[in-house]
Image (cartoon, rainbow, N blue to C red; front, side, top):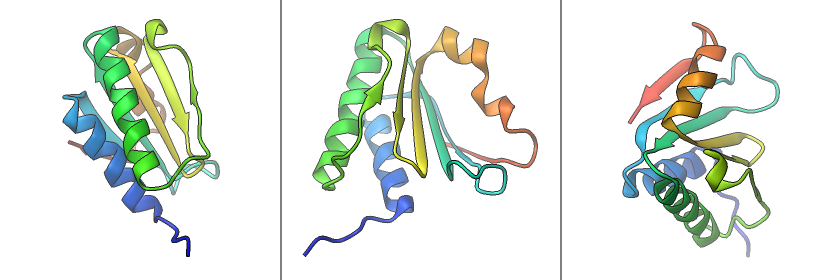
Length: 117
């Protein structure tokens, strides 16, 4: 029998995987009140291309362990930004300069709840 993993448990798994690879400035933005497209956005930075790749791989491995397999990363690690869209959760792993330039956290305004890890 296949069990469904809750959105909150998936967010927890993504955050734990990113933390395990020492992701920089890890945040989860709760946008349920602001977005009809997604519920949570997880954003973190890596200090180098190898670290970004390690975070991406750790998240990927953790999701597969939880039997979540119908997903695909977008972007190229060397570009400084990779994205994973899980529907109710969108994960951004960015280098620090891309993150500062695009300021994704700031796009959601004062109504979004931002959790820092």
